[in-house]
Length: 420
Ligand code: CTP
Image 1 (cartoon, rainbow, N blue to C red):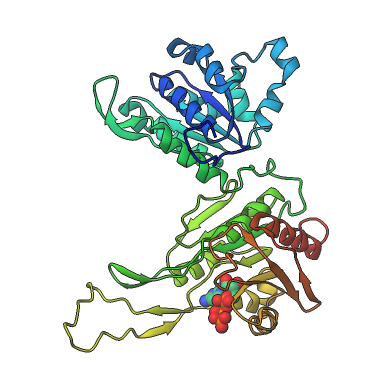
Image 2: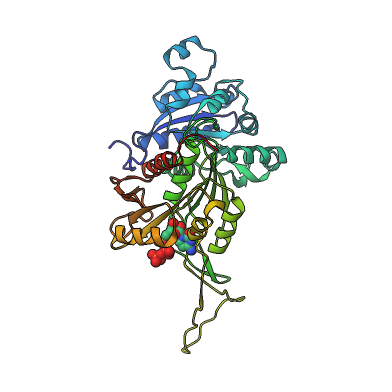
């Protein structure tokens, strides 16, 4: 294997690593080594101040690739234009991300190769900030971080620790292996940014509300009832709607995955909070209920429920939760023009989905088999059937992103024409 037995978890992945000018730049040399041994192709871009800390030759030797640093190099431009450099990557990684680089990225400046690439890329950027703690905590930096997050950027760190300047606090760049883990997590999801918003795209001018993830129904201050939904399918639908030009409100239960880019995400815990957030986001053209909403809630105890020490176990009294999908469908003219539900079934998938379509009164049901062994719950793939009054369309097993894209195409077809 020649890589010390490390798994090739990033095999075939293309990373564009932008190195900013900070003392942590030396750690990025090790980062390149760790990424290479996992099979990634790493192209390095250095800012001019980065080159004051580490020589370009060190990055060239470790990456085995040419290091880019000049926006106006005719030779580089001929070999690989800066647009291509920014687009061929699966993910852009900025490590170390200095306060100045974050500020330039947040403002959309394009005054050198690094900032131009951050503006031109169609993929998400993962920033690993490194700076003095006061600089990190300064409202200007925090404002820039919030702006970048809202634009779809991801962050890893900074960590608390001793700094090169002698102070202690948040500002140290994360260790290379922590950054590697964040890169792996980012690549496990869709890293494409939505098309620039959007007078274009089949859903341009439309508002779509999507629910996603599980709900948590508290039992007492420390316990809750949950389910195995990962949120991957719902988040993929939200991202696909955004790429198709829609304005998207994603109401997400507690999912362990990142908010999709270009989408307004509202985080909730319980079914009742989810119902409220959906109502608050109306009016909408489309509602897609992809969340695994708990059918029941418990009237939560104010204090932690204690052991009964041999006595009868405490009984949980359950009350029914609002059915968000049925409510949206029931709004008729005053609700979304198109209402789409999901049916996660473990037997008679199509029969149960047909029944659900009628019972909930929605236009479409995306039905799938989530029995143990299918790997659908929590996995990256799905095998779905689109059930409507017109019949059943069974889609081949494919990624959740592809299922989302098929659904968006069907939604666009049914809405027809441009926005109202
Ligand atoms: N749903 C909802 N609100 C609820 C329950 C379900 O919006 N309180 C939505 C889900 O988001 C999904 C669809 O309804 O789009 C089907 O969810 P599912 O749990 O399969 O349906 P149930 O009505 O709970 O039916 P059953 O438990 O009998 O299978």
